[in-house]
Amino acid sequence: MFPAVPVPPGSGLRPAIDIKLKPGWRVDPGKRAFVSASGERCPPSPRLPKGSRILPKVPALADIPPAKLSAPERDLLRYAQVVFPEGEKPEDHLAVVRAWACVAEATLPPEVSLPNPVRGKSKR
Image (cartoon, rainbow, N blue to C red; front, side, top):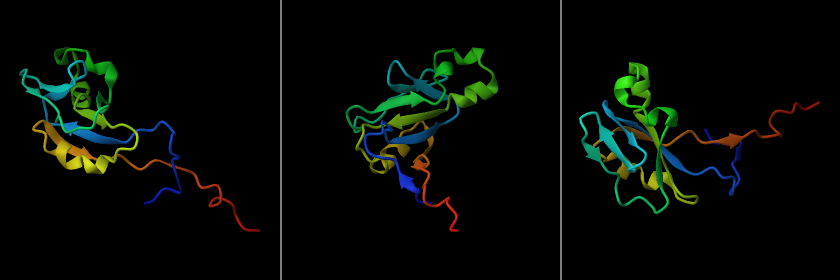
């Protein structure tokens, strides 16, 4: 489905890829890498554009040791985003992100749109 009205350039919304890590993996925000429960590291590809960031979807849980989290909270740690600089096309980097050893799924996020002011009006 195409948006009714695309988000205008300069809106501050940056392009991203949503990722779900394999079980036992999480984002290590301070190191810009992924870490497993056993301590194994999975650095992201150096082919990401300069200014890209990897962010956990639930940042409040990222600094808590996994042993202190409930099973649903540990599952939430598996979700993250690769956020690109404005102007980058995330679809150009999807194959690279999907190839990371720690990634279970990588998808483009839903397309954001604004309501179309003409569509909702009835003709009288």
